[in-house]
Length: 95
Image (cartoon, rainbow, N blue to C red; front, side):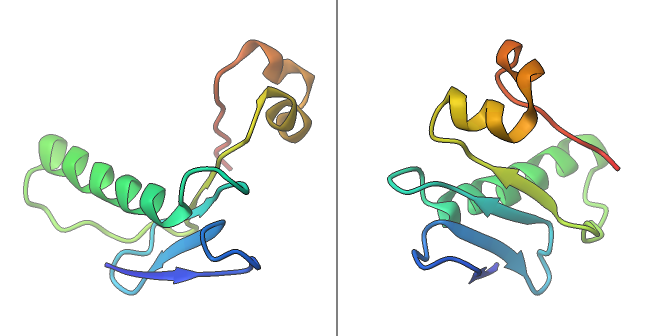
């Protein structure tokens, strides 16, 4: 897997997969988990789940990429997702 760090002064804040593993963009926060480490975990989990559910069938890249945004604390998360997010631990949006 080739990883491109994109769009941040700190290379550990934003990473996305590219080449033949083009499935995720991960945004972290200063002092948070490495976006590159989280990206690798996401790609590995996707591969493992795919093999468990679909066997050895080749996987197509996801278009658009799945965006994973990590928040430093609840208030940061609620600002991003809205007041209803106070009752959740995470969220997803599929368009």
